[in-house]
Amino acid sequence: QVKFVESGGGLVQPGGSLRISCRVSGFDLDIFGMGWFRQAPGKEREGVSCISSRDRNSYYADSVKGRFTISRDIVTNTVHLQMNNLKPEDTAVYYCATDFEGDPCNSAVSGRSVYAMDYWGKGTLVTVSS
Image 1 (cartoon, rainbow, N blue to C red):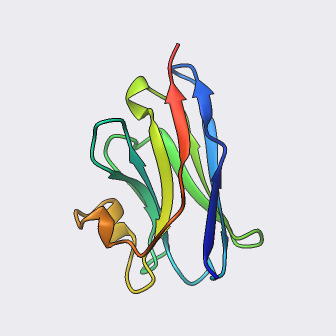
Image 2: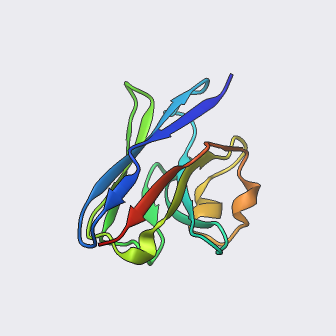
């Protein structure tokens, strides 16, 4: 049974840092790629970052380049998103998701609908506010 459990969200001041995680069970992170997405209040869900199943590289949306870093731990089957220099506009519910038949980066950074992803976690709330 596939299961994603996000953790690490919370309240942080502008300029601060936070690391969120997605622990995966039921499939092998070494085989499939993963993506992080977010949805701010009143806005559409959007891609943030991903690890490609095609080339194993990491990719980022322009809005987070240079501030966020995605990584994966094969031993614990966990994907992390380190977020630095956070801004109020980063406030959102963050979701991890995967595409079992293709590359999640197609949705995370390359323009395909985010709802083409096959499986989603329940999300973790990140609030950036003073």
